[in-house]
Structure formats: structure tokens, C-alpha cells
Length: 164
Image 1 (spheres, helix red, strand yellow):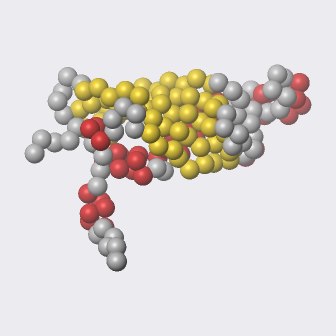
Image 2: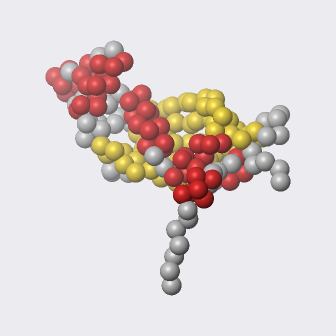
Image 3: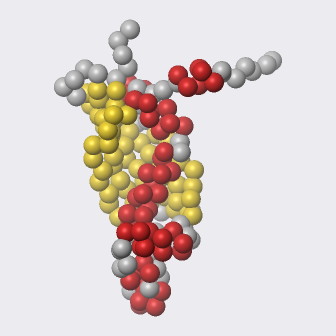
């Protein structure tokens, strides 16, 4: 039995539309380890030099006992890990806009934690225009120990499948 791979032109034509991602559709990303360089670089880039992130001595006496990653750094990595998924790559041609993002920081993410993201479609609604819908995704950063540290929702405006 031989398997024939799709031609490049067939792969390029593949895409997801609003209708292809119903409520309950779920997938996971690959993982990434949060490093000291990530935290220091993010602090330098954003100017967020909160001592909980950059001062080991201060952080040792703080509630978590050690330095923590910026919540927005983790949320950014969650977004980045999502963009690397096949699901997102197939949806990209149909994405019109990112409409809203909300995040809750449930537990600290520490330097050295490895996170992946569990993603699920939690809402799908059509807009007043028949060619568009809004998909809301729940994204959860999950550490190597199974703890959810950050939970975000992202609402995307997406094209509907054209009528044939």
C-alpha cells in the first residue's frame, strides 16, 4: 500500500473556516521552557522591572520565594505557541481580526517551568454579516507538573465558508 502526499498546491488551498471549529473543538500546542534570558529580555523590552521578576534577593523574601515570569510574557508565549499549531495555520487565511483578549493569572509561572497550551473553542456566534463569525478560544498555560498558571480568552473574527 502506498500513500500519496498531497501536492503543495493542495496543501496551500487547505484552510479552516468559521464552521470548521465548533464549540468544544480542542487541541494542544508544543511546549516551551521559560528561561532567565526570556524574563530579563522581556523586562528590558517592556520596561517592567518589577523586582518580583528581576531581583532574586527581593523575590526570595516575597510570597513565592523566587523570581517569577511576567504574566504578560507567559500570555505572549501562549499566543506564540498557538501560531505554531496546524490548526492556527489552517485558520490564518480566514482570520479577519483579533477582537478581544482577556487573561487571568492563576498561579505564578517560574523561570525553568515548561509550558504548553491547551486550547478550546468556547463560543461560536455568527455576526450580523452572513459571511463572518466570532470564535472565542480559551487558552490555558499548563506547566510540566500539570498546573494551569494562566488562562486567556481570545475572540477572533473569522470568515464563514462561501456559499457554493
